[in-house]
Length: 97
Image (tube, rainbow, N blue to C red):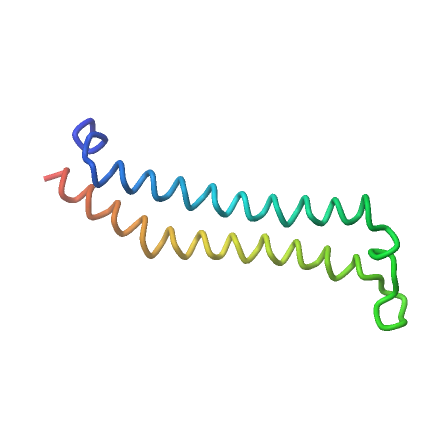
């Protein structure tokens, strides 16, 4: 396994996966803290009625944060399955023989 860890292709794969994960994490943090900042500093806006009904603007925005998190999870899983895992299997097969 030490040979695999020293391989530049493996190191590049680990770096790409890490950068991708941190990018998605950063996006989630921006969306989440943006929502929290709106709750804290834009209460009149967040509490304003949506189309004159009982639902406030904050409800769909909060739902949007949850859906955004689900979407990011789906994006990560898709990328992991279609890129990272395939490349890792290829490298393992090469180093196991």
